[in-house]
Image (cartoon, rainbow, N blue to C red):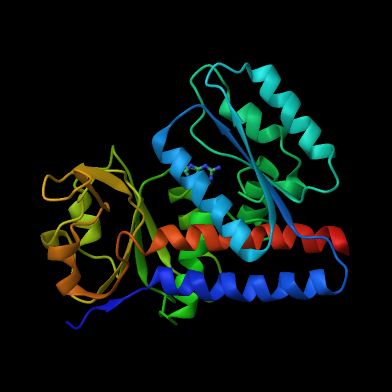
Length: 294
Ligand code: GUN
């Protein structure tokens, strides 16, 4: 099987360039720039990298952006009060709180405090509910980016069996919802597998499309997939590699080298889903800005 790469890096760059052009036009016509605030609590190294990447992408697109870096020891009350003041600030269009949060802070309470009109991560119960009902809303950035990749590469999803590995609120659950929706891409028959699923390979072997978001490095192996499968790898895992100067390398949830030869399409790690997540966040922030401008 000649495997084609789903190039998230190039697709994301194309989307970000379209957004940049729109922002330039807005500014030329005297409008204010779309703006995003990201709240980062503590020093989780992965979160710091993700937030830095989001900040850089905002700057490149011409957005105003600010990262509020807070101590690991901030109280839940202090965090809620900051969210409340950002909710009220009419110059801010989008607000994201980078997850995970420290154990002493209730993640659900924090997400619920964000004004749904600024919820560009699509994590608020109102956004999640609207998505479930098929109404227009902010979609979570990673599943949204995957839908965009499937759309731009014109991958046929109608009536296909899609296996989603992972049931997180951020990726697995919304992904299953979007793929099973009416439309293109969509119209899939979806199976969600997770840590308690018995014999995961028995599902993945019958899948036409697999979305791997299970958080286990190199989990999906060649003997677990059928010929011609489309594989979307959401995993970003850092593994030790002494042949690299840094001492580590990034791998996905898919054993790329063994699985790719059996695929019709596959996303690489890095350069697949990761950059698409960022593009979707910018699209959502522009959407929040435009909704306010109406
Ligand atoms: N943690 C992992 N992915 C995400 C994301 O897309 N948004 C936020 N806020 N936190 C995350």
